[in-house]
Length: 221
Picture 1: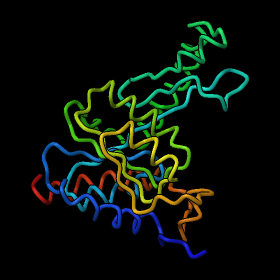
Picture 2: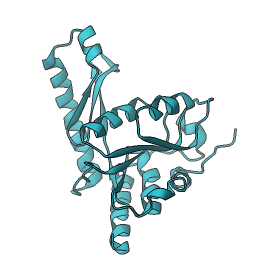
Picture 3: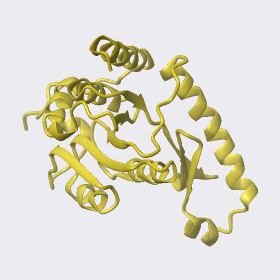
Picture 4: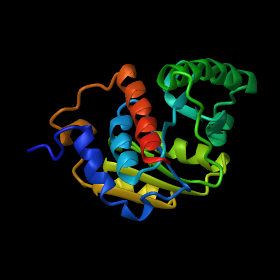
């Protein structure tokens, strides 16, 4: 099967063309999930002429069963917990706090590495376009939506070049809007839809965020 997108930048441009109603709106920001979502988000933000930032989400794994998520933390200091799972496993609050503290350090390290001193964008009351390079299960995106609700985002739009159909249907009920170029039923992984799906580096993330800022300055935004 031929790949649908040459790379993330092309995928972002195609995704952006479906968001024309948000061009140059002062209440709109683009938040990209790093690292792979940033090249996509860059093209969306450039097309729309709006600010770009990263939104980091870290899963809180159950100790000894780290693949099992008891919650997540995200940019802005928000914490989303699966209280039913925590209660079922009889996890002490101190255990949850310990895991959250550890992941919080990693979250701050990543934000520092990506932003290089740039202040985070404020999301309260904003129209937030939350971008990734593709969505398989949607678990990270669901955590991001919950975190943005806590941060009082005004309107949340999920945007990705390709979203598995099952996840598209679930996320449509959790976000205020959802946009995709493709929502295939036969979905084996995000990488199958890209010719070039090489890993995005921290340096690329920093450079794209800096370039997004320069574009807005030149445009007088």
